[in-house]
Length: 279
Ligand code: PAF
Image 1 (cartoon, rainbow, N blue to C red):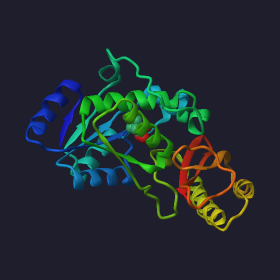
Image 2: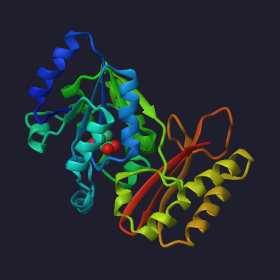
Image 3: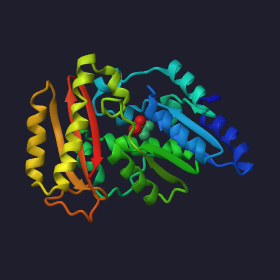
């Protein structure tokens, strides 16, 4: 696996492959890799000739400086995992390399960046959009692989790709879960053993809520029941929303003909967990 820290070296290296008509798959990450990330590498390897992964803990997407400081950084272990997973290129720029001489973009995201995660983490999606755009400019992949755990993020990146008319296809891949049902996330490593055990209830709630919605239960009751269940634990529900899965507009009645999604954010101690499930 080639490890590259600058955009110019990356361009030189990838151009050689591009000239041989090889397709490039790209998996952007902030490191602290887990099986979810590795599944994205696997998807890319199956579909593309060359797989590039980036590790960059992007300061501009953290609305909370403590979260940025505490974000797990495990570059040595990550490098080994990527090598074993058969990744071809690891791109590890620093902040200056990534942002120097760049101009912010302002694509029309149709308000998607200001609701749900965007409401509770102001500025977060501005940072995500800037960095994904810059990474796409640096890698120029044919395919971009992202996980569905960050459901709103992948919708926003899709909107940005459309708005900027970028020549890349976004592939959003399924959530990987721990055996307990807890969605895999780099932040899980910051949970205590007890919190990790307890927070599996998020999956149970999503699963039971999806069932209740399909049975025709009033959506307010579904959210109330979930909130009551969470009160049994030492956690704080930030939001639970039942939305149209394309526009993320909240719905008041379930219509099986309209793709519907439940999205949830819960604080467990000082760790913020998000998850979602399509109804
Ligand atoms: O999902 C993430 O890990 C990050 O938001 C991303 C897409 C790598 C941008 O920094």
